[in-house]
Image (cartoon, rainbow, N blue to C red; front, top):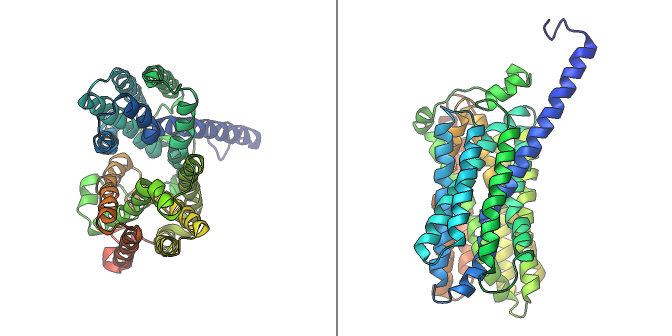
Length: 427
């Protein structure tokens, strides 16, 4: 008996069961990314480590996070490759093993290279494995709202550093070496959580088969079937990739300098207010992922990306005015806008890659698009160098505006007919 000939009551019951399973999978994916994003709370985790090892320079400790971001991209890349050969859920087991080993090694660190390997490489790769696997699988269940669902998942990942960082601070006593027990506890907690996620994860290979299993209408599943090699041969991908890198670079530049910018405008700002402001950027980042996810579903690629680009330019101008005038509330407004805007970057990375290059090879295609973070991460160092030279954050704001202007040129190129590609995906 097929769906067309089945009694209405049976069809309704099956639809209700599928709806319940999809909600369960969304919850599982959200929890997975909430824990996977814990590695981005490095600024919180680094403080007690710096207290125990005062001879380690700030730059040497910061390199841990740079390695973590690079390893995150590599982990996502390897997850995309493995998804061709093994069910996606087994990548979650890989994450569990990497998190356990990474935090365990980090809890016993005595030298910087060991910290680089434990936290930087292993935990970073674990986060990348989970990130790619969840984003490649879960949104395919929600054919009409896939970008919005991506926004919900990415919000969990974006706000993880704030939520998990606060929990780490709360349960880690302010004594030398106490962070080691917290890291050891995290190694077991992460393992337990990700094994549970593995057990609840969809037992299918990829998002297309997930959608088929849950009876998502076939015509609603875009299957451009653009292989990774074919994607890399298309000029529109490179225009999109560098546009995404510039938008990401602007957000990372702000995040890396937020605390110092606040003190530059208002030197008397207390540490508690500073923490709230930095946390506010993370919250706005998460909200931006949901806002632009909904917008992407309603307005499509072209309009969503244009709004993101214009918002970057507007936020950069507001921050420039705030630095020049020294008005605190204008600075906060700029932080809010740029935080929301930065949230659009990972959302568009996932949503555009899926809509432009299809579902069949999304995991590997997405892992390549996500590599934009490697280039974008250098913006943090550039913004710091600009301040060292000019002794003012005006140069940093001009840098952000320049990124927005170049991104606008790339967006104009992507909008030209010659860059629309075989699927006319930019619409």
